[in-house]
Length: 492
Image (tube, rainbow, N blue to C red; front, side):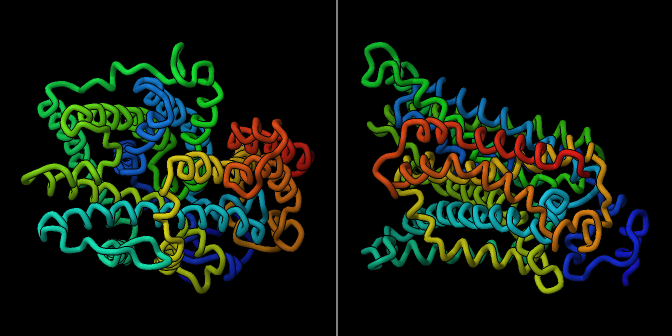
């Protein structure tokens, strides 16, 4: 056994870790490697926030009837709420140096942890595909600008995209594969370099919009569709709550696997301050940028252009290339940090002795490629209310179980070495904690009817289930947390 391995387990475990539960990537981070500061975490979040899907959140809400300040406020509040589980779940990563798939073993069992890990990984694969598709569209636009639309063509039957779009998608996908081979430390350095450039690009976009439009246009003074006299007067709260749930759901994946990053923190203060500075305010500011720029497009082009890739394609001169390169960089950074690092650990957890971090990253990329992500983005309804709210209903219960297990059941005390042993206290019955599984199922079930209706699988469901689905992430988290605490009474 290596010196690294033995030193990680000598403090609280008897014997060596089970080789089917351990590899170097899942091993607790040693103190010498915990070097991330608050600045690193703030930079990490800014690099993930500045992305095409995040830009489109506020625009999606406005296209459904909100005015500009309602949309921006909804985005900001959703991210302020999701910051709470981010910091709480991240606490264990900082204290023990363990990633999400290892931490979740404490509640679900050393084998049962594979269930929430794979659920989270599949969602991340979907997000990987979405981000890769959006970034590839920026490449597609650049190539068409410089080749006089040479890549424009008819769609491939059954796929819904043309060969040029398919080529750019595979090209951007391959760029991700190259970066995966470089490892996590290279990703950290790339983010530190890219973050200030992305901030400058966002500010430059606002300045371009303002100067070309002579102001920010009529949209900022447009009334909400929910205001008195609007087409949907009196319906605001019925739209606001599912929208807020969707905004929380946007980062629901990271709320689970944030220990994958906080395991490298120097202190709890670094992860707390870094996340508090890097998440809610930048998301709110990006939403404001989206609203201001889109408002100006009404004056400049005579129509509201919500998609930044489409907008960049309408620009002229060097600005179009600069804007699209910024979009590509932003998308790449978000995708690697949010949708490759975490599922790579999750897939590694399935068979640590066979699947390394890099192999897990390759699996993520392969599944994301196969999911045809452009179909998820065909409509605002499909993107926000089916995709975002839907997986929030699935992952909210996992977050609830993890938080109450760590803070209420175990009082933040874990035996780190035993997380890598089947015959230890986290082995439960054959490695599975049936109580956690039961709490998860009970938390998910109330939201299923509403999801089935939203996704179009059924025509109607009782009104109570539609109402519950409106608060899917909150409902699932609360129910599973309460059920788990009750079932685990007297056990640690």
